Amino acid sequence: MRLDKLLANAGVGSRKNVKTLLKKGYVTVNGAIIKNGTMHVDENSDVIKVNETAIHYQKYVYMMMHKPPGVISATEDKREKTVIDLLPSDIKRFRPFPVGRLDKDTEGLLLITNNGELAHQLLSPKKHVDKTYYAKVKGVVTEEDCNYFARGVRLNDGYITKPALLRIIQQGDVSEVEIVISEGKFHQVKRMFLAIDKKVIYLKRTKMGKLSLDSQLNLGEYRELSEDELELLTKS
Image (cartoon, rainbow, N blue to C red; front, top):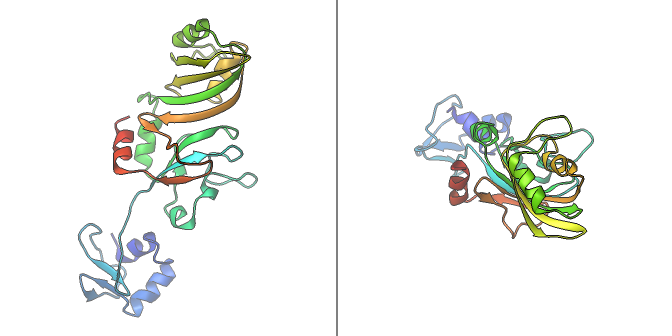
């Protein structure tokens, strides 16, 4: 990788600022002052310093966010606040994006990364990565409903969903349930319950594949994935 590109991507400064640092002799590679930003370096083995401070290059970021209601799962929007707006500038410089979408009024686990290959794997219909939700539903959810979900639900546009696991946590005028789906059609969970004449009034995603939402994260909070969590995700 070119030295000037690595320094800019590492957050040292803009391309213009990096050029100035190089010109003034503030950048060293393996102890030698380098003024030529077009020089190619090995980000994994070369020791790169700016003003004697070591620069650690990071290609990808993997963030777990507890998405709050009221923000949209997008990188930018002229009218609405997005999940990327909740991130600090040192994360934004990686140009991350949400993996998949949660409805504006839905909260819960949202993965944010700049690794397009991983995002494609997690979203590919061929992979059938499970998504687990906790929901409050207006109406009494029954075992018959569970059996129907297990066979696949016909939505209002005629589409029949893939089999889903519906588990009743508590029955009542407002039932509490857990639902696991392996696809991500538009408003899918809400539309599945509408198909049985019930309405979702609260929805929270708790898992994506084998990755679970950190219970310590409050609404709107985020953190980097651990190595173990990243491994769980890649095995999903």
